[in-house]
Length: 479
Image (cartoon, rainbow, N blue to C red; front, side):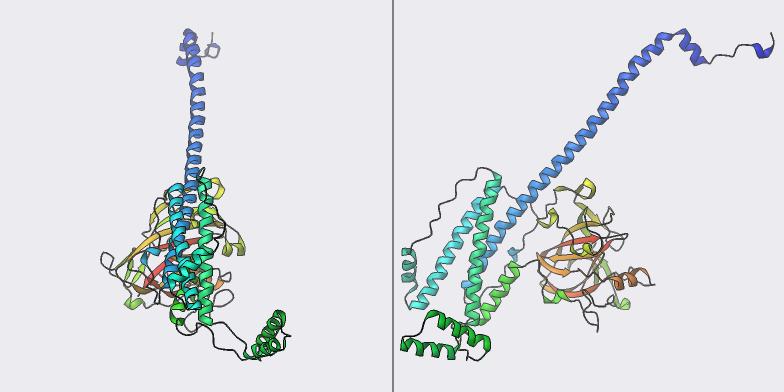
């Protein structure tokens, strides 16, 4: 036998298996069930993870709904305060407690009890205001006017039954809030009438009196004569009833009521952020990044102005709770993006379904590097941020705001900055396509404006909409 005819040597493992076949059988009998168990276990773990996420989302939806109810009741408190202020000869300064800070929402039944009590007090304020007007009109004491109002037939409004569940309690709270808002709207109209007076067309009224003396006048003729005189501008306008004495207080109250009714509408200043010496550039204008004096700049970061904060004259707000991404629009739709649950109420413990079905939660972000960028980057997406600033005294500060692509900023529940500028190529060109020191100077800013901060806690909430590629948000404060 030559060497090539020799049998191939068996490996030790195969030789061992050949000699002990029961070991192979034992391995198969144990390994296959183990693999099945691992597979089933991983599926079970994944199933538990999905169930846990779904519970998080359900809890988040419930907390957000409760926060919305909490805001309705808080709005009723503000309506009661506005009605009380409107009845005073000189309205008191606006109360600091009108700002509602993020907190664990109350249960619906507890909120309903509070709403019913507020509704009762608002009804009393309405009756008192009616008595005041009736007493002035008839020249009688106020208590006599109250007696007359009490004798008048009240509208048949049966008491609301006890709520069956949370949804029923929420519906009752919504109804009570709507009733309170109607009372505030009625009061606003009364203040406007007092402010402007009852307009009387002198020529038209004189003609109506002549017709009435001849027995030929009628209501339609009078109304048409009045309307024609006012429309043509020929009638002399008589002095208004209630004119002059309460104009200052009335103006203050009308402004406060308008601010309460329209918290998401920008005031006149936010409609146009004017660059230095340039015309307004919102919408179709042209602007430039505001200039800074780098030589005198002392930069700082944080959210405390005064003792405890960093010594600086240019402060970048770098600490936020951020949540996202949520589904966003594309193209010009970025500048009129979807509204998501955080806009209904900030609940830092809540979780929601975000972009692509992923679960998103509030993350605390303390950025060491300027500017602020969300932890998770996504295109065609929406993000939200919440923080609180501590200010040592009531003061006006300048906010410098910039974003890629668009942002809105609310200060103490009032819209302080509205982007919406679909023609921002000028901004992106300056930021990305030229040599600049904007990052070094904390100045990725589209514009700036002056706003008022309260002493103590001030809350800030932003909405950031991103289209393609890069994303950031910048808020800087200066004196």
